[in-house]
Image 1 (cartoon, rainbow, N blue to C red):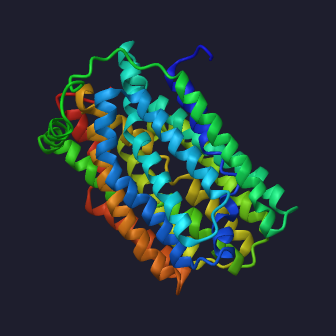
Image 2: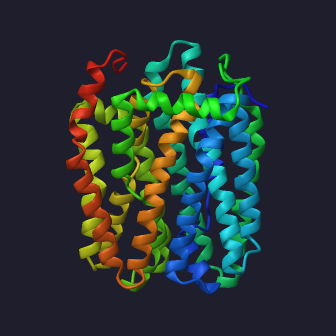
Image 3: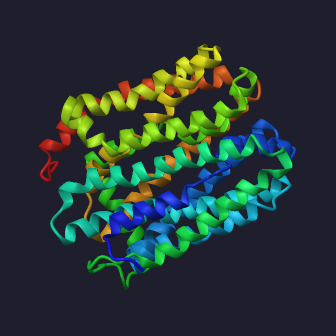
Length: 400
């Protein structure tokens, strides 16, 4: 369809797949369908539990038949889910949609990183992994800037039943991303597991993590310092409404947060160059936790907006750095499976915390935010995130 590299194609696909024009009113829309705040949070947990269950099978598929087709399957799941969302009315219908969304995330999570790294390795450009993942993250967040801003303007002109119009636009965009995924090129990598059974592939990936102390440490850090950006997007809406933030600023806040996040992810490697690997990783891991605590104690509408923008803007900035550290330690034969195993553990932890926080949010949103902030800061300190870059530098592989 168009001649360009896989990284650029994935960035474009990521952009169109994440144009959620209804995101800033998603929780309010579900509440209008009779869902409680706990049920809304439970849907987020169901998505994450589905990711947990689907991660490893999806990683095995990617290592057996190729990364491209995993991305195609992921985009198909997402597009189907968005069209179903357009007609959903009951809680169980939203649950089914959540399962499709979770499967889509599972098929995408390990495959897209593996596809990029293997594409770069074909041309001896592994050093550009941080920049490549920054571009993917930036395109994701750019969509989060444009969609809530455009959607926010639209919803001010619509009544609650008419919000389906912005859901329709989202479904069309997701369908376009699905079509674009067919243009990806499978890297010229010989998959050792092409003829292996799922159990053999899974066992090989598991042993690769078990035998690498650094991979185990990255697994713990990426899991327990998770920044819960999805939970933030779900809960800030009713929190802003209760704090008398105007409806326009609910959408505008997410848009500005998305723009800021796009910039921070695109230039995460520059932040690392400026502050050093150690300081950059520690600050980018801990800062969202501090912002969650501020979000819990501040009640002034005009101050809540910039706090949210900073919280969301820095919530995923460390991801390109962690992705680079992780991929440099993994062999191509197991790459998608190992990444999926790590994401599976992440998903289980996040799903449990989101469910607990969602239950607390039914009674007190500030306490829910406070708990998340404390967890992030405590985990960053206990797991000695500051030592990770130096430990990898001393390893046989090293950071390129």
